[in-house]
Image (tube, rainbow, N blue to C red):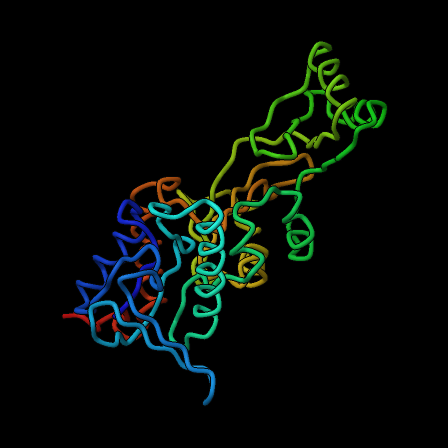
Length: 288
């Protein structure tokens, strides 16, 4: 049995399940594999082994695609009890995924499992280590520092709240004054502006694009593969864009969204994911 850890509305899970079933491989979509009515047993006395019963009988897990975190329905729980149970479920599911000997696509680290979507500032050190350009950025509550940073970019800079990811162009005198007023209460994050974005999807080290990118953008592919390897994720979405020093990365999404890509690219991505989960059955010529 292949488990798809996600929701029925996720087109990625739906597409992979259809491909696995076409190969004659049973697949099941679950939001929280360790939650009732499933029964889970974990033995630590003779090495680490586990057993999962989804339908009353032990389920042999052939592969797992991770498309979401574990979740407990809050109905019937007091808020403080639900928070505790949810935390325990997250920890148990993370440990279980780490222990599985079968293929696990996007086996998460604790850092990625718990932090959710992170800002570019968080990804910046790893991106730089992978040889990928990132926008020049500044976090400051000093209006003079902000003004000096802005003078480097005649078209303006992008302001992003530290608690969100929506960007706002700061280019007019009025906008700069509003920014200075804000800095009296909180630091701000400023970034150099970038050109039109182009998403890329890394699956098992292979990079997929909508249409053929220009050579300078395609040259990012080795760095994107290193980035995926550095995160420990087999399935990663990265948004690229022109910067003043050349193309670079402006966003990293550890939970790729298929709808960000065209239909033909989605097919290639789903085929590659299926091959990661079932490498023998999905090999060319494996199905008549």
